[in-house]
Amino acid sequence: MAFKNKVDEKILDVDAAMQGSLSFKDPVNLRINGKFEGNLDTRGNLTIGSTAVINADIVGDNIIIGGKVKGKITARERLTLLPQAIVEGYLYPARLNVAEGAVFEGHCTMLHDFLNPEQLAKYLEVELSSIMEWANSGKVPGSKEDNAWKFERKAIDNWVASGKIGK
Image (tube, rainbow, N blue to C red; front, top):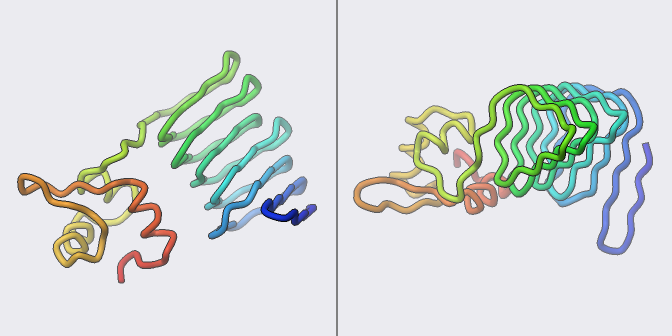
């Protein structure tokens, strides 16, 4: 594992077998070339190299996959599957690029800029009743139009990153 810290750029290059949970609050450029099992929650760029074998739930901003990945992948900004990628699972990208030759087996649901309460509950993996309670008490950023709540995904992502969820 190598860690390089440049002026405004943080790079973490992992070429080992790891398991567990990795979570980054600040943007990094994370590259995984080895094996990883568990949960990844990243900010910035996540690159899964062509030699990587990943079995994980992944949340990130920009995710580029060149290796083998199995799990649930949520890309807040963009998900790119390179020609050698083999992906199995559930994809939730804001934008999706699939190169010719990439293999994907599973389900894909595009993230929308605005979510209704049911979509937000699924996105945050919480009960719908919690979403409604937070919305009605003003704890979650959202707006009500024609008696229907809507939530901007970017505002929700910032709210979650700030640690205010459920408070």
